[in-house]
Length: 420
Ligand code: BGC
Image (cartoon, rainbow, N blue to C red; front, side):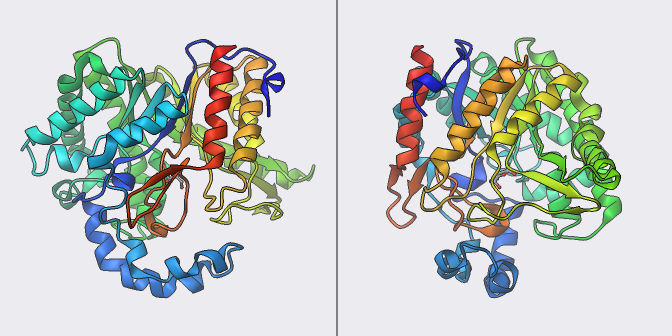
């Protein structure tokens, strides 16, 4: 893509950035995930061939996928220490926004005990971002929980919400005016599905009633947390980062069309209705679309990422259009990207995405920002370290970060768009 493809001007204050989450990059955390990783790493490495041996990328990834260390986050890229280096990457790509999460288990290692050092750490983290002209976008819950909170039953118990709102209040009281955008919860339903139905994430149980309870408690938690935050300050812009994929009918068959409507309702509307009145914008995470043939998903398999997800980046246009038409609230794309170890599709993906956002804007959708997932390679939850989502490659042995060619190109595109 070159500047002539950029037919409309993006709004001047459009947020161009990247996203991360604490546990996926910081290293040396202690939360419910760290415990679970150590307990399960061996089994996961043994089961890997069975589970993902059919992926197109298998031959390239199998050495990592079959190694138990792959499933233990450990030190990772040690972003906790080297965050300034990573902020430099944002600057190099001409970005003006960065989404990250604050690790609750660092701030409140025991119930009611605040860790001053960690609070100061995140304060200087935000100060440094501001210094270099980057808008911080803070996530409060991105899948990791302090062990004490999980032991109390986590989000399975509605009465536990008070602990989360207390943490949220602490964060906003400490960070005050230095932050404006806050995501209370990342992908609530994904968290609930993986942890309470699919047994992929801790506590890794199959309990449908708990799944529903957690989904509803997370919506309640968002409502309570936003009320608490608004009491601290009226300038905050609040949302959830909502996972959304684009369901579309494979054909004109009545069953394909009915299933599509049903799946759209379940994917988006059932949950969004529970929290949208308590948002100032809608955070949208888009990775994949799903082709619905009668009662099945039949995705095209021509072009897949390293995680075997079929790649249809342009469909983000339809997600944006659908959500905006329904909820009439500005949208920020809070995550979007692909696992692409060889960096062979990232540039194409970003091109398609920018063009799709342009089209959506042209069609009247108010889009306020685009945050690519992810700034650097990170720990991809149950898959471990082998999937490479980073704009910057991380050498886990030396800690060295290197912007991938697609990222350098993306940086030039951002500059051009921002200069138009
Ligand atoms: C999550 C990220 C994850 C990404 C890629 C999103 O579901 O918020 O934590 O790394 O997708 O799978």
